[in-house]
Image (cartoon, rainbow, N blue to C red; front, side):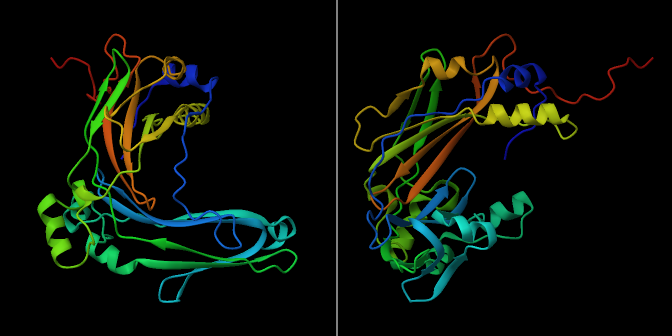
Length: 309
């Protein structure tokens, strides 16, 4: 969860420099082409720091007016129809993220949430196997395609560090799923047939590294401050590197850091991406970009500072 910062000097200087910096190397693990579609894929994504888990899917085609998806049992889990203006112009890519409930009851109680789904419950809900997509295009074509969901989940990256002097992000391969399951719990899930393979033995095809500002304007901020906070939040550096790199580290470009104001609170996410696109992410918060003076220390509300006689 993001902290609230009132950083008028930072936000105003950032408002004029909105540029998203992304450097990516695509790992072609989606189904391409996907039958009559250009691409389709289904995947599981876990934030192992926050302890939430979601199901994501994508299907891409030309001049579509309808798309539906079916699970391995042949049951429809999604349907979209173009209406009005969209029916006249059609659509192409459909990308959907499910809600991402917390993965343990303890986390839900801690966050005051009622909605949680354990890892075992989630895997039972989203069965492994072939997911089928069907569509209808503007001139009556009916593309079909299929892609496979597996329960091979890469272990969560660990040991995240940021060397601000050299602007280097480093990490190590992990052995568990963070807040969602310990090493021992994962062995139990494998023994019970819930998981096909312990996550620490699932190969990582790519590591995804994201460096981004972690700021919000305060609740009573002006529209200008809200806009400036949103602008600053869009300044992201993203890169994917091969999963078998010997030195698990990435240097954040000086050009990107120079686009951020002094003392910008930031966070880092490292994702382990498997061959089937399943991904597990770990976060490092409390990073201070371009630190100067007192750094990114949050101003605490100390109440009335007047002396009491």
